[in-house]
Image (cartoon, rainbow, N blue to C red):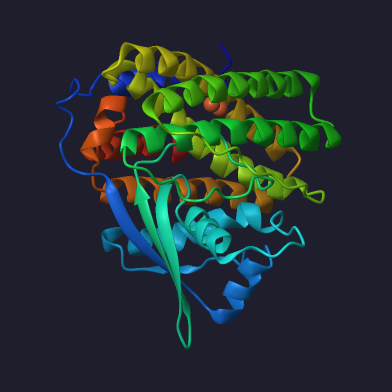
Amino acid sequence: MHTHTLLAIPLSVLFASLLSACPLFPGCDSDTFDSTETVDLTPDEYVQWQQGMMPGAPTTSAGGSTGDAMGTSGGEATSSGSSGGTTGESLTPDEVCAAVCMQSFPGANLTSCSVEELADKVVVTCNLSQACIGGRGHACVRPPQPAAGPDPAAVWLARCAHDEAASVHAFAALGRELAALGAPAKLLARIDSATHDETRHAELVSTLARSAGAEPTPPACVTLPPRDLLAIALENAVEGCVHETWAALSAAHQARHASDPAVRAVFAGIADDEARHAELAWAIDAWLREQLDAAAQATLTAARRSAARALIARLGAAADAPELLALGLPAAREAARLSAALGQQLWSAAA
Ligand SMILES: [Fe+2]
Ligand SMILES: [Fe+2]
């Protein structure tokens, strides 16, 4: 079991403690878990997105009470991808739409989106639902197209399978980057092991998705130019320390509360692996911090806390999708409680 000096206890123990306060399914909650958010871009920012660049801090509006929090923290969170998103290829309007929504609302499950070009701005509308954050992201992975289908649970599983497969590429790319930076062999071995875990997760969740009637979309990846250490550290702080840590806790909830024993079994295995991956993210964070000066370390901490606030705000303002409760996902109120507890005990507590 891996622990990190910043983590006073193993994450699996922290997760068990947090989940023990959860009422048993199906009594957690009965709200819905969908939300609509908008992102206003200037015409210049829209052009930058079309060119594959990710301009910093798009201004969010509407979408209920999350507007301010997401506008502040979502922008900072995007900085992790800004240095690595240039590919030299033009994005289609659908790709821009998906990229803007996923950068502005990290960790959200995008069900559909649209772009409206007005005289003085471009309005991107993002329809979000309970997130499948089945793995970590990486700048090399193209945002997936919104999933659709008659069965929300099948759609969720298909998106989850996509994210698990994407995290295979994410870990492989991260491993190459850290090897080039001279990372310790032990750390690289843990990343290699996580890559194999994600391959297994993708296969298992793909099987569940197909059984439910949905075919997962394979992830699309691009080759990135070399990134500097801070860009890699920022991405790890957001994708690993925040998103993958939340994914681990969410998977542990599914392992306990899914109605289908087969789903519980799959997510029990995933939850154990993801808790290790989350601890790996914090170990990577520690090693990368050692290479950074104090100002860069403060930037890193701010990015992690920002991404955490964005996630907590979104989950706190989200509405439920009752048809997803059978998958064991925490209902809206419970997700808000769990993420807030993680924020207090982990994301804000760590340096
Ligand atoms: Fe995974
Ligand atoms: Fe993972």
